[in-house]
Length: 165
Image (cartoon, rainbow, N blue to C red; front, side, top):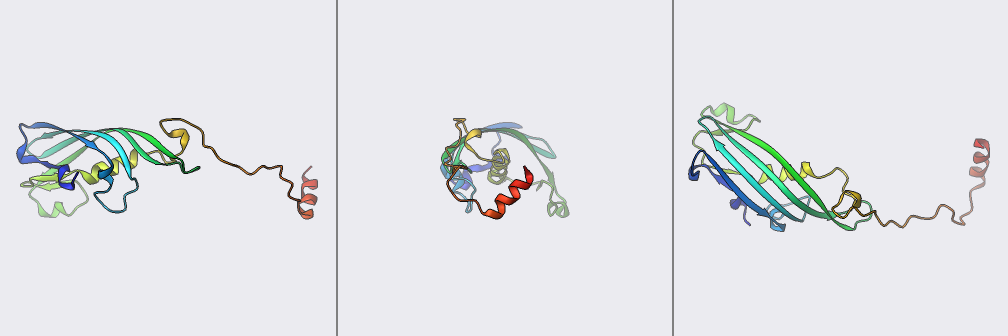
């Protein structure tokens, strides 16, 4: 997969509404440096609707991402599913193109969706990536130190514990 594979060419639209399907794999995250993830298996479905002044792009993401558990560092797969819409406004006003809104020049022919898809994948991921949120729903296998170890307790702490009791 190349970055140009994720270009939407508005000139080649068959009609005012068109759809695209992509299969994203490990190469998706290697297209740009410093990606947060390495491995995935994601189906991406896109529907575009072009009018005179706007282009509506509906994204549907479904699949999983491979990462490591943040507790035990065991490899896990996390399911992601998301649907969202991006609206691109077409304008001839050059001042609007510098704003943070999604404006495109009227004669713009190609739009790359990589950054939009990558951001949505990152936002879809759970805040904590742990075994319990993975596809397998296993519990983390942690080796906690036993609380009842034979380590001697400092006498000062023993005196403080007596005050609490």
